[in-house]
Image 1: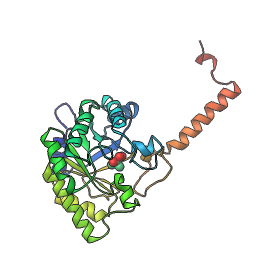
Image 2: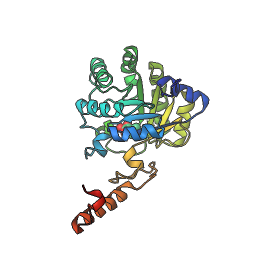
Image 3: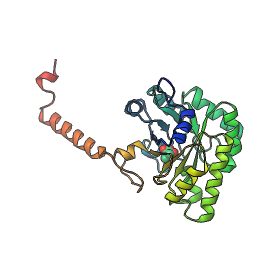
Image 4: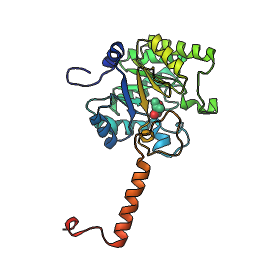
Length: 268
Ligand code: KIV
C-alpha cells in the first residue's frame, strides 16, 4: 500500500518480500466492487469469469471486449483502495501485439482499471513486454487457462507431471522477466504452487494452487455460495447466499400474496 492506503502493483511485490499474503477476489459490478473494496480485499479482478457466473455461458470464450470494458468501468468506479485488474478476453490479445496494445489500452482508458490480466506462458512474454513498455501493468495467468478449454477439452488439474511442472515454472519466469507484476496460478498441485512462488520475485496468486503461493484469489459468487452450478474442490464457501436469497425472495412473495407487505409503517 502507498501512504494513503491504496494498493499498487509495486506494493504487491513488497508484500511478497515481507512474506505478507495477498487477498484477491473477482467483481463484475459497482455494488460488489464497493463491498469488496470496503472489506479490505487487496486486488479486485474483473474476470472474464463474468461469462460463466453472470452471463450464464458454459465457458469464458464468448465474452467480448465491449462487455469487459463495461464491467471494468462499473467496478473501478466502486474501488478506492484495491488494485483493479481487468481481464483481456479471448482473442483480444492473441492475434497480434497491436491488438493486445489497443485492447489493453481500452481497459485502462475506458474501463479505468489499473492493470490487465492475460492467460498464457512464455509464448506471450513478448506481448507482456510490449504492454509493460507502453505503461500497462500486466498480471499473467498460467496453469489451468480457461480460455483454452476448447484446446484442452477438460478443466482437470494441470501440472501433474514433472515435465509440465518444469514448463509452467519456465513460463512464470519468462512472464516475470517480461515485466509481469504478478501471476495467477490456477488448479495445479500444491508443490508446484510452492515451487513457482520460490522461483519468482513477483507474487504468485493461487486459485486451487495450494497454501504456499503468495496470495489467493477466488471467484466471488463461488465463495459466497451464490453460483452453485458446479463447485471446484478449491472453492471454500464462506456463505450459502443462493439459499439465503431463495428464502428471502420466497418470504417476500408470501408476504405480497398474503397482503402482509407493505405494512402501515412501510406505507405513506
Ligand atoms: O476470470 C477469472 O475470474 C479468473 C480467476 C479465476 C483468476 O481468471
